[in-house]
Image (cartoon, rainbow, N blue to C red):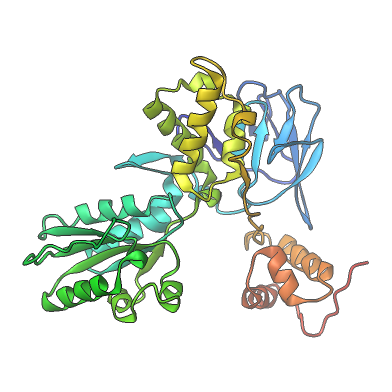
Length: 378
């Protein structure tokens, strides 16, 4: 999936032996530094590989310049100056434009996976709990969802991060409660909101938490009677490291707000930002970019060295099995994973990023009898 500052996500379909490049017939990829025939993709039983075909500017995978290297789902690939995300399956789900909804910058996958589900729940009058890491947009999403309910009646926002005791307006019977960082809200206020919801029919609560809802209850951060308002209706916002295709547009948004010319952001710098893990979310990226801009001076290019302390290796996104349309490759990869794990289903499941139950289901679909067959590495 080709990505860039313009926000357009362009899918490039690859098959075994496909050649990518500015003049390639299999997969045309254009851009500064992209050779006529830049790299070739190979699909093997143990995974996918990319091979540089002697290009002048090189082929990089997650920051490593290589002649031939394995690819995993979510890897950041750079051909010359052109950035891309390797998607092992469901490529069509990425295609489209990265856009802004309010102050939230997101691509089509985010719209499908959590934005629309949250809005649909709120439009139907259901309560919803929004889970997510810091800085990923859950508070912004809660406010966007609340705006859908403005015509129904009053909207009251209670912020669990506010200093001192959060104030709940006396005598107000809102039809929508927005409870930000509910897992930091004192229990008396949680109880007060739960009672207020019980007194009026048709009330919706939109809450955000920085950890899974059941964990917040188990840790004593949320009272069970408050958590019961959501009746299992919870939606998790995808962390930035799993939505790397959105990051160039997020960087552009930050640069425009900070008055940083896009010409100062080199492909190498953008690549480092896209492939890094950002536990602090968008504010973390904003701080890093501002720091690099200040270090470079008014017109200097932003360099990776200026933010090296901010860059964190993202968690490896485990590859998923190939699509059902290629059962022979799926079987070969499953057999290979089991052989590498000496027949241990648990170890094979970890290496493939699947649950043990999913391994058994996949084996049954592919006609592979795990219980009777012995797997070992030759």
